[in-house]
Image (tube, rainbow, N blue to C red; front, side, top):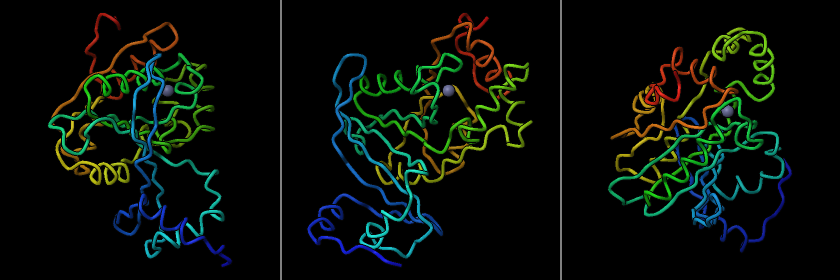
Length: 250
Ligand SMILES: [Zn+2]
């Protein structure tokens, strides 16, 4: 394999900011912190940003990983990242959200789901609380089925299938999301317990089963409209989400 010779100064600068996390047969390269001021509803809020790369080449040191980057075709595969706020490592109580990517909701502001609202509100909760982290999980589109399959599932939903059945009809599990790498990244940033922002007790249980120390849960409902009312009701009826806002969802 042809690899480009890298400037030793570039390598040493990057090595200071890249951490190698062993994860069984695989390895996670975590880069950060990188200063990221965010425009959060008109206010500038300061976050530290980290991004990670999963690799099966567990033998590669950081120099070898960097040397292979340009051949990796990484733009074809989404990488996940995390926004950290405050003293995330040491604060007694820290809020976290594991946010599954939603191209239509987060980017376009689609009202068919509540993802865009949840993304912004989670960041706001974290900023107001003072300490926390939002994990943006890029391989979780459509509860893990991918964007193209999600578009197919939307076609089925427009023809009477609910969000759970649509995934099942396309040959997927209802929920194919994996949190393993994100939890390893979390553990490298904080070992103290965390409070999870979610409406989904199953997600909380899945994270606890994967070794995360969760001490509490904060629900997050809102932005209910005629466009996502059915979707939200399905989440409650079929996906075990708690309905703490009965008045909003009659
Ligand atoms: Zn969504």
